[in-house]
Image (tube, rainbow, N blue to C red):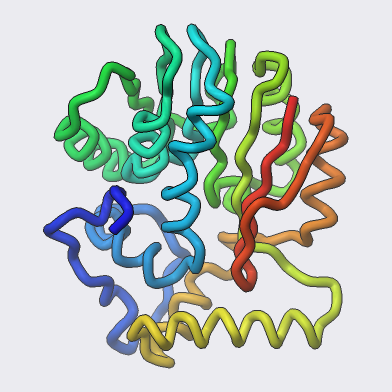
Length: 250
């Protein structure tokens, strides 16, 4: 198993297993934080492949004496994966999340590992965090929760704070221009969730909770914005159904 936040005491995600009279908008609260490892493993195809590859990426792109930013770090799985790959001296990871529950649990989990690479946990909106001396920045399924009108602003600030040759990893759930293709690939994603044991009710209620909270865009829109923000190169390195991970180079 990939070393991530799943751990031995993983709690099964049953948050949407029972009918709910009112579906509240999705938030990263204490209930979600408690089941998040199981939720993301069973909801996001390819997530564990990203974590598996992060140490390899870190070994190649994290420069000595620089910062790594994990923006929207959740329980710290990305930060820990990067930690395992860092080879240069004097590096530091800044892991940021707005959720107090996520940051607290991330601290407990990350503290169980020995590492020469320190992780600074920051509870804050990623839009408010200064980016400085960065050689690697992670936006793992984070930008999709940022208001559309502020996404370019965030990417420009990231680009401005990166060292030459630095890399941004951007993972997102994407939309498709062709509505027939959108429907087909969405259903393939739902098939993945069914195969992980989610019921039709769970799939429907979770989808309703995420409506207008998670706002996906097309791959073309992401590429265009990355170039507008100043990144010189952008390529897809992983994709499974609606979930894409891009590497953008400063």
